[in-house]
Each structure stands twice: as C-alpha cells, then as structure tokens.
Image (tube, rainbow, N blue to C red; front, side):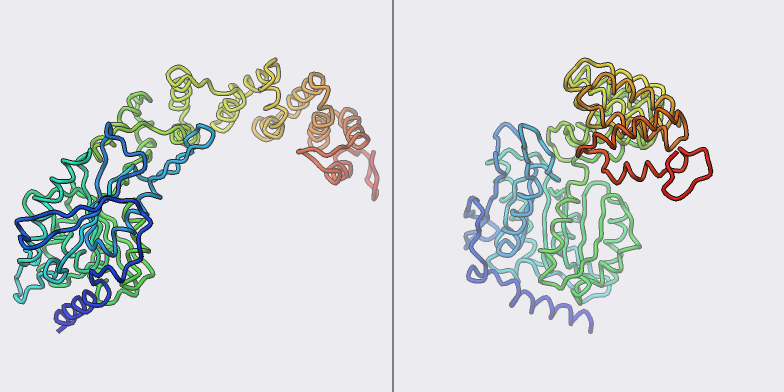
Length: 481
C-alpha cells in the first residue's frame, strides 16, 4: 500500500509542482545559450538544452560541467548558485579568495514529457531491480550519454568531470546512473530521493559504502514526507568519504533552493582543500614543494583542472603549522615563500609566528631586530603593535626586566611616541613590582602629557596609579606611595 501511495505522490507532484511549462517560471536574468538538439531517441521531438558559461570563459582552459535535469525549475537556480560560489573577487589587485568551487559550465536539460522520461521503476515484484530504467527513462539516459554530453564536449573545453542534479523522481533517475554501462558522471546530487523497496536498498547500500569514484550528495527535508524515508534510513548507517547525506528544514518544493548550495560544494570538496596538510606536514620526509605539487595533482585528478594554491590558503598553512607547533614545516614554508614566491616575510610577522609557535629565542631576536631597524615601514609597524611585544615579554617569557629595557630603548629612539613607550614601561614596572622609581616617573609623564592614543585611556592610567604593588607601606584609601 505504501508503495502505491508513493507512486501517486510522484504523479501528483509531477503534474502540479514540476510541470515543464514556461508560464510558471520567472524570466531568467542569466546569460545563457539555448540549443535545440535532434535525437534518434526522441525522433519526433526537438530537445531543448540551455548552457551557462562562467564569467571570463577562456578557450585555453578546461571546465567541469554540471548537468541538471528538470531544467525549467533547476537550471536557473543551479547556474546562479554556481555563479556565486565560483565568483573570484579581486581587491587592489589581490585575490581575496571568495571562490568555494572552480569555474563551471552548467547545462539544463528540459523535458518534453517528464512523466514518460523520469518516472522511477517502482517494481511490482519483490525482487525487481529499480535501477533498470523504464522505457522513457532509458531514452533519456541514452539522450544524455550519446547526444548531450558529446555535443557539450565538442563545443566547449570540458575537463572530463561531469556531475548531474535531480530532484524528486529525477533524484531517483540520477541515483540509478552508477549502475548503467559507460556512466559518464563523476558527481551526483540527489534531492528528495524516494526508494523504499527492499530490493532498492539492497542494491544501493553496498554501492554507497564501497563507491570510490563518484561524489554523491543526498539531501532530504524534514517536512518532505514520503520523500525522506530512504535518506533517513541511509543516514547513520552508510559511511563513505565520497558520500554526504544531509537533512534540511524544508518541504518538497523548498528542497532545491535550500539544499543545492551544500550539494554543489560537496561535488567539489577537494577544491582548495588543505585539510590533509596536518597529516602530510608531520611526515618525517615532509617537503613543502612536494606538498604544493600534490595539491595541484589532486585537483587535476579530481576535476581535470589546472590550479595553484591561493595566497590566502598558503598563509593558512603557516597558521596550521603554528597550531600544531610544527617548527620544521613553518621554517620550510617561510623559506619557500621568500625564495620561490619572492615574498620575504615582514619582520613583525616573523616575530608573531615564532612567538605563537613557542620559539621564544627566535622571537626575541626578531623583536630586537625590528626595534633596531632603520626601515620606515618596519618602524611604523612596530609602533602600531606594541601590545604584541609587551605580551611576549610579560606573558610568554615572563621577564619584566627585558620588557622594560625593550620599551626604554624604543622611547629613546622614537621621540614622537614618548607617551606610548612610557605607558608600557610604567605598566611593566607597576604590575610586576619592579624598578618602582622608573615606573612612577613614567606614569607621571603619561598623566601629565596624556593625549588620545590606541593603547590606553586616562582611566587606565588612574587604575594603574591605584595599583597597590607600587606601595611598600600599609595602604590607605587613595594612597599613592
């Protein structure tokens, strides 16, 4: 009985929610090409496909392709999401790395008779194989394999990484593709997948568990009744790095808009993925140049595209090295950045890196190097970051004497910043109960010559003045010295 209800649900949704009629769809704001193909599999019909090319499409480059069924409802949505997810943002000639996926071609497949072409094979027999297409779906499969994909490959520079999207009954269609001979798809997004027969479960579950080739995203809605049972059955039972099953607070018709972004991102889960750095950088023979080559080859193998690590991600490797206290990796990355990339790291940044990683001897050397530098830019950086140096001497190496010596030298060097250096001398002295006369004189100087600055307020000076550590006699209210 439940099987019959599901079949009826498919037919109703097909007729009312996803009918392929242009009058129900808003006019697209996207720029795309519309092509009408002739096919031996649909001999009396013209088959419409729409093609969205990424901005800046370059005939010298190769591009992955996402094919989406249900073109009237999914093409425009998919293309817009792809456009946003792959958007490259350049600010002041710098790539700020807003792209979560590579540039992609999107192809929309428009159905002339959706019921005929995509109705699942809900077998009437206990051991029936639902992955065997009915006659209309077999024709659609052949149209995709033999007509659409060859056409796209002949007209555009494709990389060989093909993905396909389906929702509702087309979700069932795309989930059956891996069981077809010569399947050309490396990625699948299946939204609102129904398939509750035991025979379908027996066939799908082992495949999803052992699949090594295809990235598969299955999305289901908590309010998508009759179309979420199979995904709920799989979730928590089937595990694979190439599989992601996600739940969304959505009903049937909301599912594509709510879930598609996550699905598209999963298709390109290796793009800009540097998570393996934690493991690779801890290998005894780790080499940063080899790791960057591995990064390129990984994307080439996965998506057929040429790519180099972005500067933002390269600097993430530095932070990842610091997080794991991996001095060897950090030193290699900094040396590579200087010698190969041609970007010597600023002294202050080097100080921060070695401070964070715990190499205090090197950090102390760099602190004194920037203090004695005659470079105007380094001088300005130092004066803007005095708190970092105070924190290093007081909290990291816990040496107030070195802190005082550092800021006294700075006070003597930078005549226009007397008040800032005086404040840190007073603070180091008072809060650490050392060199009290020096602390007192510098605090008085700050109180007398106060002006607005980035490090302290007048209230901070008053609080410092009330610090009891300065007083060697029994304290009274408002007593100072």
